[in-house]
Image (cartoon, one colour):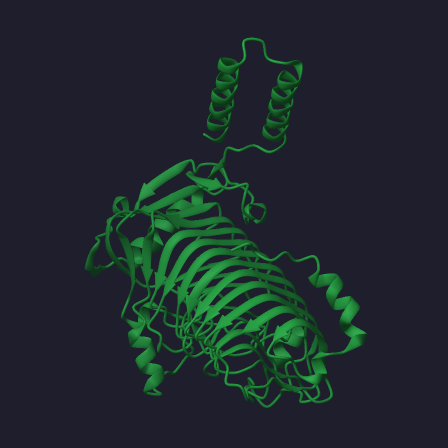
Length: 494
């Protein structure tokens, strides 16, 4: 369309010119020739048409104009075998249990993993089920109007071993409830659809937490472990019992065009928590939750230190949402295996307790290095930028108080926050100061005139920030290093 419009306009202009001159001058013809050559050069060097690829049998548009996660996920061919949950006797009436039906269906489809893979379609309806495990070379596809409902029977969420990087359940000693949709040691898995819904019906679990009658740690809505080449897209996840989407010990994971919803008071209903995982890309997602929208993690105290499985090469892009009790994007607090090379950009956060937050503590150990956060818009966020410590949250008495985290190279730029309540709070750890904290083009509006930055055990450099930063963030030693990095970041024209 762009090419046609451009050529039509040039044709009209050329026709008008010809109408006014019976013999156009050589200069005019040369000008027209140059315009056409330049147009052809632009069209030849960068296509104006979108690229389409097939992911698990579904066409997905990859725009060349906007940055994309496409390179993180290796394209899979259309599945050889496509069946419906109805083919296995499933009943989508919102009452009948389909737990054994889902389990039986996926066991059957597992046999096609080495001959082109399989796809299980979930048609329109309300499909009650307990936990089920996915398989490799497999697509779970929710058609329009399809809703998977988490069972309200605790027996349908069996107890499994704790994660080795946590040493116990995150909330209770011992094991933990399995996630509703689960997978371990998988490759080439696609979870997608026509905006179908996976609803954990988490109120039962939240009440166990509120009433202090929870015996084992709650299950996630979706957890994939030790898995590679994963695509999660075009779905709505809601009412998770605990963290919503949890890729742990995974690589090459794309989470795209996903909506995550939970009541804003639902406890610990994090949106997306990449955990000890590499090459993860999260983009174009909308999240409302009772905890962090996105939190990057890597294990808990001595167990995470021993496993030493970092989270690295992670992108969070074009994320929007709200959480009244926690942060829009966070690092930690479980970060004992280390976190590095994280980019978070083009974020919109409102009505939240914090915008950007790094959470650590004594006993965590590990490291947080090379974190870039760029282009953030916030409204009514209490503390737009916060580094916090001292949660005193440890798995058991075996944690080492001398294990302190190393924090260096945090780059925050192009931030606008409206109706803020507090200036930035940057609290490092005594004996392990946070170094190389760099901020540029940060504007926080709506603060009381007396509001000032609160800084302890941090050092870095700020440029073009309002209100004026604390003395610890005005180090000339850090200035050239900070500006070299931040100078490579462009301000979003919007």
